[in-house]
Each structure stands twice: as C-alpha cells, then as structure tokens.
Length: 177
Ligand code: SF4
Image (cartoon, rainbow, N blue to C red):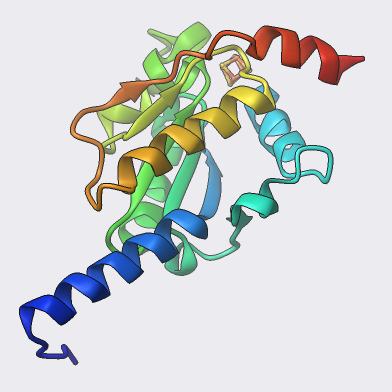
C-alpha cells in the first residue's frame, strides 16, 4: 500500500530513507565461481578485527533482507542462474559490489570454457574492488565509496573502480604486524 503525502513530507521521507540506507547497509555475499581467496578476505572483513558493524554493515542470510550484493569471482555457467535469482529476490533499490580481479574481467579464469567472464556481463555492477584478492581495507573502502555516492539519494552515475587512497598501504602494513 502506498502512502499519499504532500511534497515536503515526501522530501522528508526520502531523506530519512537515504539516512537509514547509508547508515545500515545490509549485505549478502555470493561466490559465483571464485577460487575462495576473495571470500576469505570478505570473511576477514567481517571479523571483530575490522568491526564493520560499527558502520552498520551487516551480513544477511536472505537476499530479501539485503541492500548490497557483494559478489566474488568470475561468473561460471553453473552459477549464472543462481546469481540472477539472488539478485532478483533483493528489494529495490539494490546495489552490487564486485570484489576481486575475477569479478572485474574473469581474471585468471578469463577465456575458460565454463566462464561467462566478469560480473558486469550478468548484472549491473556499481563498484568494482580490484585485487587478487583485495585486502579487507580495500573491501571496506569499496563499500564506503558506494555509501558516499548514495548520500546524494541516487545510485552511482557510473560504475566506479576503487583506487585505494594514499596511506592505505601503510595502514595495511600496520594491520599485518
Ligand atoms: S581475484 Fe584472485 S583471489 Fe579473487 S577469486 Fe580471482 S583468483 Fe581468487
């Protein structure tokens, strides 16, 4: 049931929706053919060490409760239909982050007989996080880039490839110690 409200109230409602979306992005993770390297980094990102729940980022088990699909690996022919089914089950507006070089282009699996190639061959991808595999800092930064774009109340104008900001390498070295 849709609620009829006047324009000023509609603007207030839109602002509240955007605030809630930016402050509590619930995510679902799907491996569409990855070697598992990127998935391990995503799991590391969810550990208390990086504590992404302080940003409201929460992993969901059901696509019906998720705003962001974090996808790893190239898309294999076997996973393509499952990936699409998960995406279709997510409520609008929904966003896709492709993690790892395989998600960008097929990576080391590029040209394999059983691979469709990168995730954007199947789904509209909002943010690409490059790396083989990208570290948790890179994945968190990819989510932050998406959320920054959503603050305007719109989805990113075009697909963005995340470049790690200066200083992240140092941070990574510190975290590794
Ligand atoms: S980008 Fe590297 S780590 Fe990630 S799925 Fe591809 S080969 Fe594995």
